[in-house]
Image 1 (cartoon, rainbow, N blue to C red):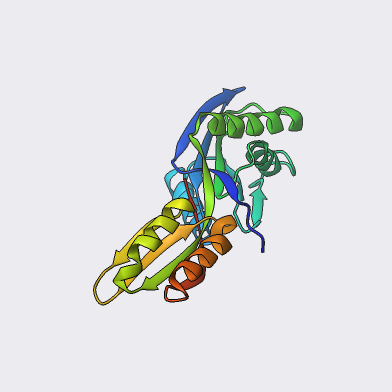
Image 2: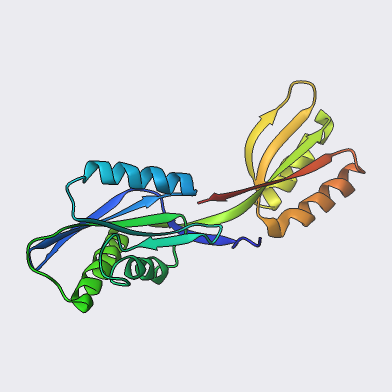
Length: 208
């Protein structure tokens, strides 16, 4: 699967509340990276707001998995509208839940859909949206006399040092943008005449 070089997401919880014809709508956004995160978040919210009439939601994850639920509301009036709000901001790894307390006055499907969409839109507008860049995990292993070459290559290729070990030999764990991967490998192989070992892992990270 090809992952985007950059994503926009929401790291922190945010909430927005509003009323529509006596019904209360509470929009909430959470950061979720897996379906397990999603299920745990939904369980927690439903437990906390156990007396709510509906818990409608939508989520979109980085692996392109997404889902939405009307939770008993008329089909297409809630979950899909929440997903539309998520996609309006081009977000990944988020779940938006809109909790409704019915106030006794029925809303038409159009008004209901608008209420759910606006609740989701407003909570996302108020949330701190952040951009994260894709990095791959890479390891450098060498004798100590090549450490300066590694440091220079890391600096020139905008890599991030995650950890370093200077016990028996120099070992660096780094994150690097995929676009710079071949360049840094080639540079270090040339400058050290192959004495710097480079290991690229499959792990992917998004870092702001």
